Image 1: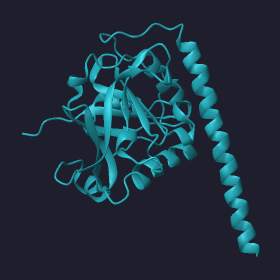
Image 2: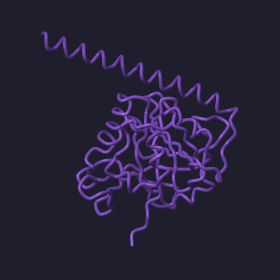
Image 3: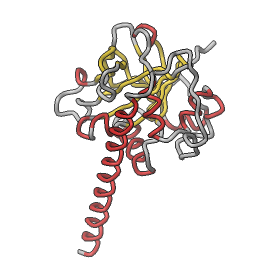
Image 4: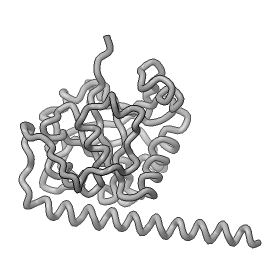
Length: 246
């Protein structure tokens, strides 16, 4: 009985803490989106300029792979969620969907706290990628559809990111649409509902992506599911175009 009561207490405490963190994320997003309406959209010729206040070591950076990443990605990995949301709101979507076609590597970014980073990682790598490995990015195809890319974690640790064992699963449809997160602007939306039944937890999953100003081969995105609070509680991520192998 004591053990059962202890488990219930821990579970309840975790649920309360998670709900509090989700509410914090949502309030933060509302404030940032509203304030961004008075800030001009950055042009593609602009370069991301990060102050010391917006960049820090937040536990998201993977030191083992950072040396091979584009400089802009390393900067994004060091940014807190509020600055990532600000950057998203000041960015523009790719000029056309055809430009996206190809393979993109990806990583999760800061989601406001150690708890939310943990939840994002579990949902992305374990629940969504169950049986396929860790999320490695996305592939965009010519028919306005794409897939998630997964790579066994052991391969990434031992040999670095490779394409030899990449598995592509979970299709999505992508198109330029009015932004759900930032009303009055546009984003490239990735919708998964067409490829998941209504009772699937991933049926309401959706991403929005935009170009990082001055870095057209790097995209900043926000991903969410409706039952998790939608885009106001969305998790930031980034994609960068995969280099062609010789």
